[in-house]
Structure formats: C-alpha cells, structure tokens
Length: 271
Image 1 (cartoon, one colour):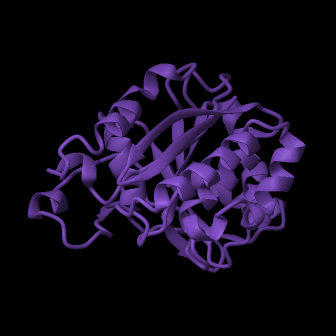
Image 2 (cartoon, helix red, strand yellow; image 1 turned 30 degrees about the vertical axis):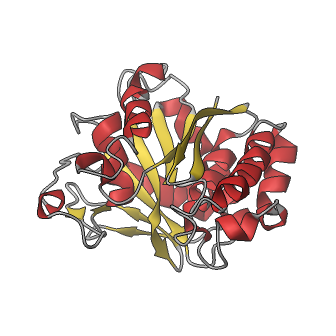
C-alpha cells in the first residue's frame, strides 16, 4: 500500500449525473454545473491522497457481489443516444488485482459470496464522476457490483465487511443518485416529492450509526420512497447502503445538494 495507508478515509455517496452530462452541452446549459464543481472539489477535502479507490456503481448488478480484477480495465460506455464524442472519453486508471482479491475474501468471510471478474470494464458510474474527482486517473480503482436481489441489508453488510480498507487509505465511493425515477426528472410535480424523500434521507444519514442502519434497511417505508426509486429500480440508492455500512460508527452528513431537472439531488459523507 502507499505511504498514506495508515490514514483513515471517509466513505462517500456521490451523484454521478445523467450519462456523460458533465462532458456535453445540456439544456439549460448550467444544469449540471454545481454538481460538477462539487465533484471537482472532493479530492481536496480528503485527509490524504487515497492509496486506492473502490467504486460501488449503480450500473453493475450481479447475482453475487463481484469485483473488477483486471490490471487495466477498459471503459464500458453503458449509456445510449448521447453525442459521438462522449463515446471517446478516456479514463485510463489502473486496476488493482490484489485489492480485488482482498475484497472478495473479506466479503466471503462475512458470508457474502463474491467473485472476481478480470474481464469486466469500468462503467460510467465509475469513470464519469472520477474524471472530475481524480482527473489524472493515476490512482488504482476497483469497482464493486451491487447484488441483483437489491437487498438493502445485504449491501449494508457488504459495506461493514469492507470497513477495514478505510484504515489502509482506501476511499470507498458509492456512485448513484439520491433520486432516480426517470419519469420524474423534468416534471415539476416531483419537486416536492423529491424534497420529502431527501429530508428523510438527510435525517437518516445524520442519525447515530445503529439507528441509521436500521432505518436505511427499511428505506421503502420512507415518505415517497417508491415515487423516488420505483420498485426493482432502486439500484441508484443502494450504493449508499454500502458506504453507510463501511462507515461503521462514523458520523454522516449531507455535503452537497442541488435542484436539477426539477428534483433535489444530494451527496453524503461519513467520517
């Protein structure tokens, strides 16, 4: 590990925007500016340069938890209908096979079967936000999948299993969206709905750890929960469960919020 391996890292849940939104024209032109500025400033808020980064992406689901284990994963452009230049974006971050093996082992020890995938590339849930957060692409990255069953408790447990990595300088980032109903974006009727859910989410994240995990596991009971994350489409919320689990007893707080496409979107940090 790097010289920073004795530095405890926070865990983060960040919004990754809409496809390659930060790297193309949008209407209105400033729609994603505040979020982009937030992501660009994340690195300077950390206690040290990460020794490695684990990204839990909303855009990778497998029957069992899976980790990228290739030395140099290629990019997987898993968005559709965007300008041609957005399929030429590059983010040549190295993989970290040793870290991938360790993650699979830690999950296995927690009775959460996990597999390594040397062929799987990095999806846009990883490279779009990291191009802004760590533009030099010189920190090793391992991507962790979600599980197909979308069980919030299992994802909290997966995070707990990986908590020790924080003391080795590893930054664990959940990449998703605090609101993700495709029919709601751009619809002003969803403004109050997203606000209501966001208030619940902020209160929950800022609660004591034991209460936080209990309430997150039952997130479907939150106000407007299924209007913000429709049934079987909550994959954009579940990365928050992993980073909350990895946080242990650390305090949580909202570190960013903005109104985009008529909805409130937030980011959270635990340390």
